[in-house]
Image (cartoon, rainbow, N blue to C red; front, side, top):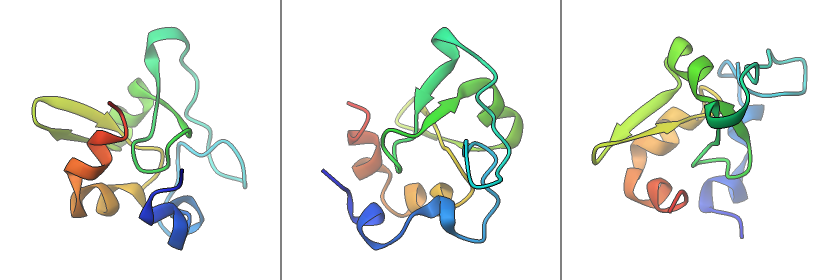
Length: 90
């Protein structure tokens, strides 16, 4: 099921830097394995290295939980409705 953000556009195709995207000539931040890997709550299914996301500021804290984002475009989307995107990780 696609969320509203995915239905309108892919944040990773926006002009914002996309350091965690694994393709399209973007830097791959999936250097970690195991417990370091999670998925983006905005672009559900996009893998994200927690360590790399923290190093580049691609995360948000909401209700005592940390959410790791796959690209710069996901930050504003998450900020616009954090409860909605946090629910994607439940």
